[in-house]
Length: 289
Length: 201
Image (cartoon, rainbow over all chains, first blue to last red; front, side, top):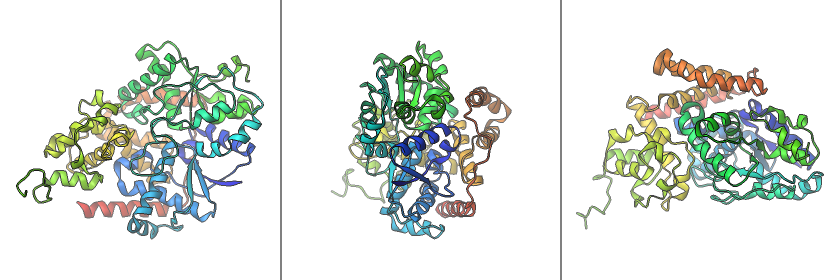
């Protein structure tokens, strides 16, 4: 089964490991990802804050390219890219005038027919196949599943793929491969996103709350699907722990590498050594690697 | 009835409120101060002003206070306030509109680094169609320099260089330049956006 694929800038750069994991794992369950040609940046949060027109128009160019593939579905693993693209598609559906205005500038016009999916929707559709391929059960892995903001909350009215306040897709998938996800209170709280660079105090306090709750519930790792959330919780962990006196650190996994490990893949294939906070050790300790 | 304050008319409303409503696409008049937004706002403690207070400020026509409020700059655009609002008011959108209006009115950004960051990001996308960390960081420091001179840059580099080094160590820095070939289309979209903003002002 072929699905169109928009990696976005993160998966081509600082989170390349996520791109590798996603392609590898999905191909094992029969999904061929076809990267759309010559895509551009979605504009991320910056376009939303600076320029209302570009916030819709930049993802629109990608939607036009995606529609032209003739495929019925496009998967976008990054939460921010997913959110911006879905919002653009639904805004243009409601505003034919804006759609016509943007389409005059585009070589490939937005038709609006392709289904925009996040990675959890695609993984859920292959839940049985994932369970079948899971040669190792992730016993002892107690993740706090961290969804962050943009998978379920949007700046305007769009269809939401999971429960807004208590999404459960990640837990569902991880349970089928034997992990023991925990109930916790901060799964959709904000990590601070780009504030980690431009307003560090704000980002650190937000992350400290996420860490404290996950640890109080007995989590031994985080699992996420958002490259921004992953980078923040992973790269700023030492700083958060130092400032707020948090004794224990936690590896921050992408859901894809854990599925990969359950399928018998090793740390190198999944590039698990590219985490800021040591992430191979726990999997070895649990005899999963 | 016509004398009642409960009857709304554009003529008697304050022009600042009307502009915020138009630009943010949010109906601020439907706020009945239930404060669910305040309860959910992750930066409410830091920002002093919570979304409900900001909305009230705008309704009262406090233009200067609103354009200089800290919440708009602390807002992480998590959209919690909007998803919990019984009247569907998305304060993150109000914050975006206020920051744009403050910029047009030549009011200094309350947190200069936030302004530098997003402005540099949009420039970086205009150059290559995609965001490349190293080029972006260069543009960001250039914006910091414009805002606060050498001190602002040195201050920022203390934390960003640390991140850069760990990225290098963990093979998460990339050195090639990712580009979109169809950059002429992207340039046209930027131009159109500038024209639209020009016609609004």
